[in-house]
Image: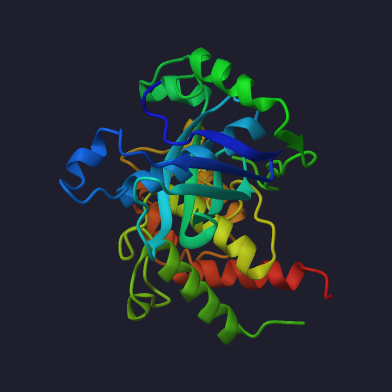
Length: 173
Length: 134
């Protein structure tokens, strides 16, 4: 579980929105190389942090039954960098969710100042994943992940009511 | 409030520019989403989400892009063509598409060409016409 780019959730409303924080520290190895003598958090990892915040929001909305895969970065723009000692917070909001996919909008704050926008799309890869050669078990929300999630679930997870569901089309295949 | 066709054209264009990262001048009414504008599978879902938000409409699964029709073997004919039943189903599911060219040579490989900018405009117009006036 090394590839986790958020430290904890401070808010989590099921099917609606979530806020996660990431404290940037000079002990992190990547900052030695990005860049030598000038450590700044790579924007690609800020996108990853938002993808994890929003991806867990999407996964939780369907009871973590689906593999939730980042499918598209709809928009990503930043006006500033985070450096060691800074605290990033990722504010993700669910825009749409269906059986096939979900769209989220997100704002990135640097020490409570807005510095970026990251809007994403996720694919749900459930039972159909096996047909595409993917593992039949949930390889995104693993047992180890679920144990971690349970630790911060109490106290921050609330429900916003039932999420949107797919509506069947009138014509038949 | 009814939205004029010109306004639908303009807003559908904005949706495609944002969703596909194409230039405004590329979004002509006869441009195909896949072939001309480079849409990939996830982009079709992105377009659906953006159209729903932009026009305040609900787009049921498979209504705008009825890909399930091609998953039914009864709808496929010989030599890579759609069967007569399949063609009938496609037309039922896509009353907003222009089949005049496709009818001449209904190849499965040409089905993506039915999804043009004009198809989206007609679809949105039909949804807005059916929507209750606020």
